Length: 465
Ligand code: MN
Ligand code: MN
Image (cartoon, rainbow, N blue to C red):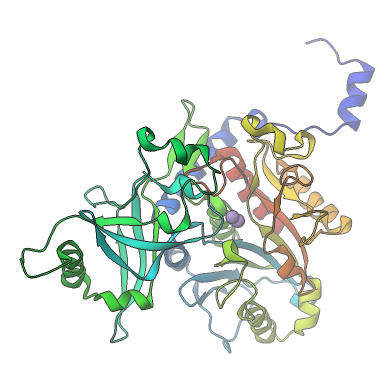
């Protein structure tokens, strides 16, 4: 190879360019990238709802010797703990050797809820040979994308006597699936000329759950009765029990490799399991001198509300309890703490180039993506991390050899979005957004790169180092 010219060398030294992580990784690292993806796909298939993600994470933590933490418990350096919030969110943490008043907490905050179609509280009806469940969608979805695909039903039903039934139908090979119908194109002329927001409306997202009539001439809604009877025989459920249920229809597809070269993964719910799985595994797998927390929270997709969303005081209480258990002043602890708000961003999509600004877009396979700010219309609703903190994190990544990139979500005024970052920042904790670029975010089947997944994991290891 010819020697580089003076200008070429200078350019290399002074210019910033994003690089494809697959291209930079040597054979050993490529192997690690692909191996890590196998564990992730397995996690995705087991954990399609926040309840399942919480359960699976706790099981994984237990296997690594983590034990449950309750408020008031004592803590010491080296302790490995998990804290469960209502079975819908979990914080897994390690107590480090460093003084927590000086060093603070190292927090990786991600979410385990994902957009989906929730079953209403009085959902069941029969019409035209079908029994259906009425729904109210959860999170920002394009409603038309959720029709004519196989769906699974996941969730919990609390019966009259208080007993809780866990339900999961449509995932195993022998299971039936469920279905939301769409109109045939032959009759879809009017529908297709309408606004995409209206071609399937909220009240049309009804899930087909049966078609077999109960054998009794004297009964009116025979198909509905037959489904109710099946549910009652199998789970002890009556129609009234839907009132105290959280049932969700989610895509029944498993996570699959995408492409001849298997570089990408297609799956439901990459947002935000593609960050929560790396956060969890980083804290489970690697010891740290810092006290590190992987927060896997609920309700991000609807504004981080409720008792399981990050705005709930329980997470602040947990940090305070950890501080008290270590004999530290909580105000000093949080002032010294640092947080990566681990959530996905939009990958640049050449099919829709118009909504992106290419220089400041996340490119697939160029590594996990830092967003100094999110928000919309002039950074509104954004955390907007300080240059100092971004500089600090940047150095952590450089020291650890993380391949990563920086971006905004879309071009200015094209739209925008928010994350949990601002809620952690409110606690006086330096926070910046970091996460994997996703193609077709919030669709029933989203796309990510295995390189970005692994880069995200390495970024969290760097943050804990
Ligand atoms: Mn998200
Ligand atoms: Mn989202």
